[in-house]
Image (tube, rainbow, N blue to C red; front, side, top):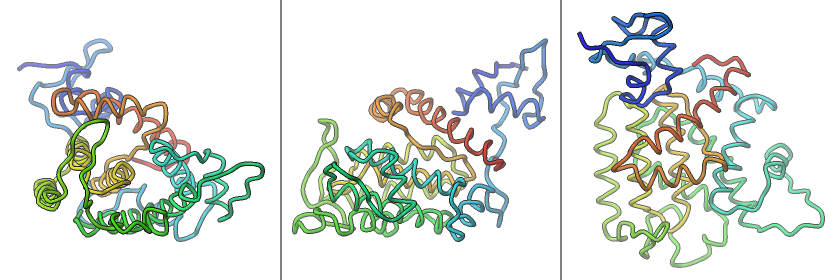
Length: 295
Protein backbone atom coordinates (compact mmCIF):
# COMPACT_ATOMS: atom_id res chain seq x y z
CA UNK A 1 0.00 0.00 0.00
CA UNK A 2 1.17 3.51 -0.79
CA UNK A 3 1.45 5.99 2.09
CA UNK A 4 1.63 9.77 2.12
CA UNK A 5 2.73 12.37 4.67
CA UNK A 6 0.56 14.55 6.87
CA UNK A 7 1.48 17.54 4.69
CA UNK A 8 0.43 15.72 1.51
CA UNK A 9 -2.86 14.53 3.08
CA UNK A 10 -3.62 18.04 4.34
CA UNK A 11 -2.93 19.59 0.93
CA UNK A 12 -5.01 16.92 -0.83
CA UNK A 13 -8.07 17.57 1.34
CA UNK A 14 -7.67 21.30 1.97
CA UNK A 15 -7.19 21.13 5.73
CA UNK A 16 -4.50 22.39 8.12
CA UNK A 17 -1.62 20.01 8.87
CA UNK A 18 -2.43 20.36 12.58
CA UNK A 19 -5.96 19.10 11.87
CA UNK A 20 -4.60 16.13 9.91
CA UNK A 21 -2.27 15.20 12.80
CA UNK A 22 -5.18 15.41 15.23
CA UNK A 23 -7.20 13.08 13.01
CA UNK A 24 -4.31 10.59 13.04
CA UNK A 25 -3.75 10.85 16.80
CA UNK A 26 -7.44 10.34 17.55
CA UNK A 27 -7.71 7.32 15.25
CA UNK A 28 -10.05 8.98 12.77
CA UNK A 29 -7.92 8.03 9.74
CA UNK A 30 -8.03 4.28 9.26
CA UNK A 31 -4.65 2.69 8.61
CA UNK A 32 -2.52 5.67 9.71
CA UNK A 33 0.50 4.75 11.84
CA UNK A 34 3.55 6.39 13.40
CA UNK A 35 7.15 5.81 12.40
CA UNK A 36 9.12 7.62 15.05
CA UNK A 37 7.41 11.02 15.12
CA UNK A 38 6.11 10.86 11.53
CA UNK A 39 2.60 9.81 10.60
CA UNK A 40 2.15 7.56 7.56
CA UNK A 41 -1.30 7.82 5.99
CA UNK A 42 -2.75 5.48 3.34
CA UNK A 43 -2.80 7.38 0.04
CA UNK A 44 -6.45 6.46 -0.51
CA UNK A 45 -7.58 7.36 3.02
CA UNK A 46 -10.77 9.42 3.15
CA UNK A 47 -11.20 12.67 5.03
CA UNK A 48 -13.13 12.06 8.29
CA UNK A 49 -16.62 13.53 8.05
CA UNK A 50 -17.02 16.85 9.80
CA UNK A 51 -20.71 17.11 8.97
CA UNK A 52 -22.99 17.19 12.01
CA UNK A 53 -25.25 14.21 12.60
CA UNK A 54 -28.77 14.46 11.21
CA UNK A 55 -30.75 16.78 13.41
CA UNK A 56 -27.59 17.85 15.25
CA UNK A 57 -26.34 21.44 15.34
CA UNK A 58 -22.63 22.13 15.75
CA UNK A 59 -21.77 23.45 19.25
CA UNK A 60 -20.64 26.84 17.91
CA UNK A 61 -24.00 27.48 16.24
CA UNK A 62 -25.82 26.49 19.41
CA UNK A 63 -23.71 28.89 21.48
CA UNK A 64 -24.08 31.74 18.97
CA UNK A 65 -27.84 31.26 18.96
CA UNK A 66 -28.04 31.14 22.75
CA UNK A 67 -25.83 34.19 23.29
CA UNK A 68 -27.69 36.11 20.60
CA UNK A 69 -30.99 35.44 22.38
CA UNK A 70 -29.43 36.50 25.70
CA UNK A 71 -27.66 39.51 24.16
CA UNK A 72 -24.71 38.31 26.22
CA UNK A 73 -21.70 40.60 26.27
CA UNK A 74 -18.13 39.31 26.31
CA UNK A 75 -18.77 35.95 24.65
CA UNK A 76 -18.17 34.47 21.21
CA UNK A 77 -21.34 36.03 19.77
CA UNK A 78 -20.24 39.48 20.95
CA UNK A 79 -16.71 38.99 19.61
CA UNK A 80 -17.91 37.59 16.27
CA UNK A 81 -20.31 40.50 15.71
CA UNK A 82 -17.57 43.07 16.25
CA UNK A 83 -14.68 41.32 14.50
CA UNK A 84 -16.63 40.13 11.46
CA UNK A 85 -18.38 43.48 10.99
CA UNK A 86 -15.27 45.59 11.47
CA UNK A 87 -13.01 43.54 9.21
CA UNK A 88 -15.51 42.93 6.41
CA UNK A 89 -16.49 46.61 6.27
CA UNK A 90 -12.89 47.76 6.62
CA UNK A 91 -11.86 45.67 3.61
CA UNK A 92 -14.45 47.60 1.60
CA UNK A 93 -13.23 51.03 2.74
CA UNK A 94 -15.10 51.80 5.96
CA UNK A 95 -13.22 54.34 8.07
CA UNK A 96 -14.63 53.18 11.38
CA UNK A 97 -12.06 51.75 13.78
CA UNK A 98 -12.42 48.48 15.64
CA UNK A 99 -13.10 50.42 18.86
CA UNK A 100 -15.77 52.54 17.16
CA UNK A 101 -17.40 49.39 15.80
CA UNK A 102 -17.35 47.87 19.27
CA UNK A 103 -18.85 51.04 20.77
CA UNK A 104 -21.72 51.05 18.27
CA UNK A 105 -22.51 47.39 18.93
CA UNK A 106 -22.29 47.66 22.70
CA UNK A 107 -24.13 50.96 23.19
CA UNK A 108 -26.13 51.48 19.99
CA UNK A 109 -24.68 55.01 19.92
CA UNK A 110 -21.85 56.68 18.00
CA UNK A 111 -20.22 58.86 20.68
CA UNK A 112 -17.24 60.24 18.72
CA UNK A 113 -15.84 63.68 19.44
CA UNK A 114 -13.75 65.85 17.12
CA UNK A 115 -14.02 63.45 14.18
CA UNK A 116 -16.10 63.36 11.03
CA UNK A 117 -17.70 60.02 10.28
CA UNK A 118 -19.52 58.94 7.15
CA UNK A 119 -23.18 58.20 7.77
CA UNK A 120 -23.03 55.23 5.41
CA UNK A 121 -20.19 53.68 7.46
CA UNK A 122 -22.36 53.87 10.57
CA UNK A 123 -25.49 52.58 8.84
CA UNK A 124 -23.69 49.71 7.15
CA UNK A 125 -22.10 48.78 10.47
CA UNK A 126 -25.45 48.54 12.27
CA UNK A 127 -26.97 46.81 9.22
CA UNK A 128 -24.13 44.28 9.18
CA UNK A 129 -24.90 43.39 12.80
CA UNK A 130 -28.44 42.54 11.66
CA UNK A 131 -27.08 40.45 8.78
CA UNK A 132 -25.01 38.38 11.20
CA UNK A 133 -28.11 37.77 13.30
CA UNK A 134 -29.87 36.60 10.15
CA UNK A 135 -27.18 34.10 9.18
CA UNK A 136 -27.15 32.71 12.72
CA UNK A 137 -30.95 32.35 12.83
CA UNK A 138 -31.10 30.75 9.40
CA UNK A 139 -27.74 29.02 9.18
CA UNK A 140 -29.15 25.61 8.34
CA UNK A 141 -31.59 26.80 5.68
CA UNK A 142 -30.72 25.98 2.05
CA UNK A 143 -28.91 28.81 0.29
CA UNK A 144 -31.22 30.55 -2.19
CA UNK A 145 -31.26 33.64 -4.36
CA UNK A 146 -34.05 35.08 -2.21
CA UNK A 147 -31.98 34.68 0.96
CA UNK A 148 -28.92 36.33 -0.61
CA UNK A 149 -31.05 39.23 -1.85
CA UNK A 150 -32.53 39.60 1.64
CA UNK A 151 -29.04 39.95 3.12
CA UNK A 152 -28.25 42.65 0.56
CA UNK A 153 -31.44 44.53 1.40
CA UNK A 154 -30.50 44.44 5.09
CA UNK A 155 -26.94 45.59 4.47
CA UNK A 156 -27.91 48.53 2.26
CA UNK A 157 -31.11 49.61 4.02
CA UNK A 158 -31.21 53.38 4.63
CA UNK A 159 -27.85 54.09 3.01
CA UNK A 160 -27.22 56.72 0.35
CA UNK A 161 -27.23 53.94 -2.23
CA UNK A 162 -30.83 53.11 -1.31
CA UNK A 163 -31.85 56.60 -2.42
CA UNK A 164 -30.44 56.17 -5.93
CA UNK A 165 -33.06 55.16 -8.46
CA UNK A 166 -30.58 53.09 -10.48
CA UNK A 167 -29.21 51.23 -7.44
CA UNK A 168 -31.26 48.11 -6.82
CA UNK A 169 -31.15 47.46 -3.07
CA UNK A 170 -32.06 43.83 -2.41
CA UNK A 171 -31.98 43.00 -6.12
CA UNK A 172 -29.40 42.23 -8.77
CA UNK A 173 -27.43 45.01 -10.47
CA UNK A 174 -28.87 47.00 -13.35
CA UNK A 175 -25.58 48.42 -14.62
CA UNK A 176 -22.36 46.58 -15.55
CA UNK A 177 -19.61 46.71 -12.94
CA UNK A 178 -16.09 45.43 -12.48
CA UNK A 179 -13.94 44.31 -9.57
CA UNK A 180 -10.21 44.90 -9.38
CA UNK A 181 -10.18 45.95 -13.03
CA UNK A 182 -11.74 42.64 -14.09
CA UNK A 183 -15.04 42.26 -15.94
CA UNK A 184 -17.97 40.61 -14.17
CA UNK A 185 -21.18 38.97 -15.35
CA UNK A 186 -23.43 41.36 -17.34
CA UNK A 187 -26.66 42.36 -15.52
CA UNK A 188 -28.93 40.49 -17.91
CA UNK A 189 -27.06 37.22 -17.22
CA UNK A 190 -26.79 37.45 -13.45
CA UNK A 191 -30.00 35.57 -12.56
CA UNK A 192 -29.11 32.70 -14.88
CA UNK A 193 -25.56 32.43 -13.53
CA UNK A 194 -26.64 32.69 -9.90
CA UNK A 195 -29.31 30.04 -10.44
CA UNK A 196 -26.75 27.71 -11.99
CA UNK A 197 -24.17 28.37 -9.28
CA UNK A 198 -26.60 27.66 -6.43
CA UNK A 199 -28.02 24.60 -8.15
CA UNK A 200 -24.54 23.10 -8.50
CA UNK A 201 -23.58 24.02 -4.95
CA UNK A 202 -26.78 22.76 -3.33
CA UNK A 203 -26.51 19.48 -5.24
CA UNK A 204 -23.47 18.61 -3.11
CA UNK A 205 -24.82 16.72 -0.11
CA UNK A 206 -21.74 17.03 2.09
CA UNK A 207 -20.14 20.44 1.68
CA UNK A 208 -16.36 20.72 2.14
CA UNK A 209 -14.32 23.85 2.77
CA UNK A 210 -13.27 23.80 -0.88
CA UNK A 211 -16.93 23.69 -1.96
CA UNK A 212 -17.63 26.82 0.10
CA UNK A 213 -14.52 28.61 -1.19
CA UNK A 214 -15.47 27.72 -4.77
CA UNK A 215 -18.97 29.11 -4.18
CA UNK A 216 -17.46 32.32 -2.82
CA UNK A 217 -15.00 32.80 -5.65
CA UNK A 218 -17.62 32.21 -8.33
CA UNK A 219 -20.06 34.52 -6.51
CA UNK A 220 -17.47 37.30 -6.52
CA UNK A 221 -16.78 36.75 -10.23
CA UNK A 222 -20.49 37.10 -10.99
CA UNK A 223 -20.62 40.18 -8.72
CA UNK A 224 -24.41 40.13 -8.74
CA UNK A 225 -25.07 43.37 -6.86
CA UNK A 226 -24.16 46.94 -7.73
CA UNK A 227 -22.19 47.18 -4.45
CA UNK A 228 -21.78 45.12 -1.29
CA UNK A 229 -20.75 41.89 -3.03
CA UNK A 230 -17.69 41.25 -0.88
CA UNK A 231 -19.53 41.63 2.40
CA UNK A 232 -22.48 39.53 1.25
CA UNK A 233 -20.11 36.87 -0.05
CA UNK A 234 -18.22 36.67 3.24
CA UNK A 235 -21.47 36.51 5.23
CA UNK A 236 -22.61 33.63 3.03
CA UNK A 237 -19.29 31.83 3.60
CA UNK A 238 -19.71 32.16 7.36
CA UNK A 239 -23.29 30.86 7.17
CA UNK A 240 -22.37 27.90 5.01
CA UNK A 241 -19.51 26.90 7.30
CA UNK A 242 -21.96 26.85 10.22
CA UNK A 243 -24.40 24.79 8.15
CA UNK A 244 -21.73 22.26 7.15
CA UNK A 245 -20.25 21.88 10.63
CA UNK A 246 -17.01 23.55 9.52
CA UNK A 247 -15.33 26.11 11.77
CA UNK A 248 -15.99 29.50 10.12
CA UNK A 249 -13.43 32.26 9.77
CA UNK A 250 -13.00 36.02 9.49
CA UNK A 251 -10.76 37.58 6.82
CA UNK A 252 -8.78 40.18 8.76
CA UNK A 253 -7.00 43.23 7.40
CA UNK A 254 -3.59 41.55 7.57
CA UNK A 255 -4.90 38.74 5.34
CA UNK A 256 -6.65 41.02 2.84
CA UNK A 257 -4.01 40.99 0.09
CA UNK A 258 -3.51 37.22 0.36
CA UNK A 259 -7.31 36.85 0.19
CA UNK A 260 -7.50 38.98 -2.97
CA UNK A 261 -4.68 37.00 -4.58
CA UNK A 262 -6.42 33.77 -3.62
CA UNK A 263 -9.66 34.85 -5.29
CA UNK A 264 -7.82 35.83 -8.47
CA UNK A 265 -5.77 32.64 -8.64
CA UNK A 266 -8.42 30.15 -7.45
CA UNK A 267 -9.15 28.51 -10.82
CA UNK A 268 -5.46 27.73 -11.37
CA UNK A 269 -3.92 27.56 -7.88
CA UNK A 270 -6.38 26.73 -5.13
CA UNK A 271 -3.75 26.68 -2.40
CA UNK A 272 -3.55 30.49 -2.18
CA UNK A 273 -7.15 31.05 -1.11
CA UNK A 274 -7.38 27.79 0.81
CA UNK A 275 -4.26 28.48 2.90
CA UNK A 276 -5.37 32.05 3.61
CA UNK A 277 -8.76 30.86 4.84
CA UNK A 278 -7.19 28.04 6.87
CA UNK A 279 -5.00 30.64 8.58
CA UNK A 280 -8.10 32.72 9.32
CA UNK A 281 -9.84 29.56 10.54
CA UNK A 282 -6.96 28.81 12.93
CA UNK A 283 -7.34 32.33 14.34
CA UNK A 284 -11.06 31.71 14.95
CA UNK A 285 -10.31 28.31 16.47
CA UNK A 286 -8.05 30.08 18.99
CA UNK A 287 -11.10 32.12 20.03
CA UNK A 288 -13.17 28.96 20.36
CA UNK A 289 -10.45 27.44 22.51
CA UNK A 290 -10.46 30.53 24.73
CA UNK A 291 -14.23 30.43 25.13
CA UNK A 292 -14.09 26.62 25.57
CA UNK A 293 -16.36 25.85 22.65
CA UNK A 294 -15.68 22.42 21.08
CA UNK A 295 -15.31 22.00 17.33
